[in-house]
Image (cartoon, rainbow, N blue to C red):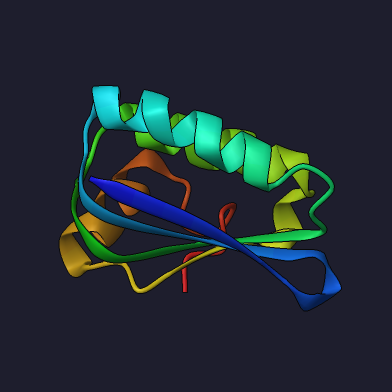
Length: 98
């Protein structure tokens, strides 16, 4: 698993994930995301390299979305399998899955 959070202009933070986002990886990622998103106005999770997400990743998404108001949080480049997890959880619309 790898995560890279990049601060961009306008208070935007893009966090790029790769690998399997299991519970252990999510705990490590949470620290990185929370530190990088301090003072952010918008957070984007890029899931281009993610094949699997655990329920702890859903929690991380919720936590990050609350940090910047739900409307300023989005998820991009998710595979269909990952999108299905968000759909089943009922979080697709709330978390702005693009």
